Image (tube, rainbow, N blue to C red; front, side, top):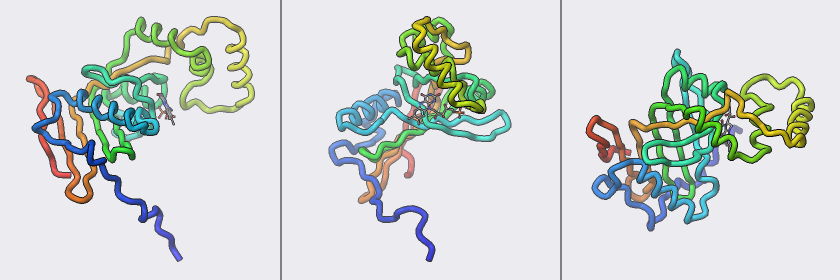
Length: 216
Ligand SMILES: Cc1cc2nc3c(=O)[nH]c(=O)nc-3n(C[C@H](O)[C@H](O)[C@H](O)COP(=O)(O)O)c2cc1C
C-alpha cells in the first residue's frame, strides 16, 4: 500500500480574523512598511522564529539555490543580512547582484516574497558589526568557512576552543560581511480559505512604489 507523501489532514492555514485585511486601498505605500507591520504582529502573537527566512540566489548560468538565513533588520528600504561572502550564496550574489527572499508564518497564514538587488556593506560597517558580535560567534566565523569540506571535526573544534579561550581579539575574516537586499518587487499573501486568498503585489518604478491586488 502506498502512503500519501504528506499528511493531507493538516488544515490549510488561515489568517486570524483580527489580522486579515490585505487590501490595496488601505495598505502602506512602501512594502517594507507593511512587512514591518506584519512582523510586529507576529512578535505580538509570540510566533516561533518569525525572522528565519529563505534566501534564494542563482548562479550566472541560472542554476538556483536557496537556504535559511536570519533576517537581521527591516530598514526603510532594505532587508539586512549577514553571511560568508565566499559561500555559494555570497559568490552567486556577487555574480548576479540579485537575490530573492521568501517568508512564511504559520501563526498568521501569511507569506511575503521579495526580489531585489544586493548591496554589500562597506568594510567599516562590517568591522563595526563584527566587533559587536558575541565572542563565540566571532570565533565560529573565523574557524569555519561555509561550504568547504570538513575533514577533521575534532581538529576544527580544538581550534575553536583554543581561540575562544585565548582571550585574543578576533579579527573579522575578509570573507565575513553584511549585505542588504534592496527590493524592486514584493508580493504579500494571506490565507483566507473560506473566501479567496489575497495577494498584493508592489513594484518599484522611477516615481516610487505602485501596488495592486493580484489573483491568488
Ligand atoms: C535557523 C537558521 C539560521 C541561519 N542563519 C544564517 C544566516 O543568518 N547567515 C548565513 O550565512 N547562514 C545562516 N544559516 C546557515 C545557512 O542556512 C546555510 O547553511 C549557510 O549559509 C551556507 O549556505 P550556502 O552554502 O548556500 O551559501 C542559518 C541556518 C539556519 C537553519
